[in-house]
Amino acid sequence: MSESFKTRNELDKKLIELREAFLEAGDPSKVETMSSYMKNKFAFLGLQKPVREKIVKPWIKTMSDLTWPEMKRAATWLWEQEEREFQYVAMELLFRNKKQWNEESINYFEKLIQKKAWWDTVDNIASTLIGYYFKKFPSAKNTKVKEWIRSKNMWLNRTAMIFQLKYKTDTDTKLLFEAITAHLNSHEFFIQKAIGWSLRQLAYTDQALVKKFVREHELKPLSKREALKHF
Image 1: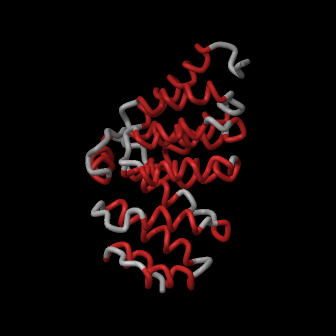
Image 2: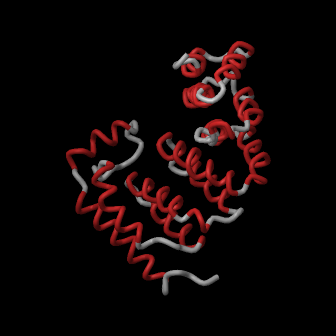
């Protein structure tokens, strides 16, 4: 497969340029607060979103029309960087080049969900990348999502519940309810929260259906509270 960059070194150079720009713009006074917000699970450079976007916007324009192999390579490099800001860029890069996705892209997204997993990356991959992917490749949806429902990985369980957050009236309620009912007894905070969140989002387009589901199923208090928050 031909590459849009003439050499691998050119792609490497663009990635190093981004890292150098991030290092220069990082604000040490913001590091502790940003890390604390993520429960000190990740290192940060202290680049808050407005500053980060100012750097990324022109940079990412030079990374348009990447082939899928180039995109994976760049995103993997970004994911391997210690500082969390680079994972945010990886997700944006993948989405900006979504025209280059293929049916196998879902397997890569699935790997990213499980690597350096926390709600900030998982929720974005689920609702933005995977949500769009299943619109583009709907035939892959049922098999893959049912694998996630049965998975022992909590983040994949959560993904099965929230990838449709932006679907509105296109929500596959049967699949959503299957994902939820399989984990109604979970004691995991992030699962209980996802159950409530997905139901609350569905209520914007079908309030009666959500009320019926909540009435007919025994939800954990957190899930029920989140589901009915706007009623």
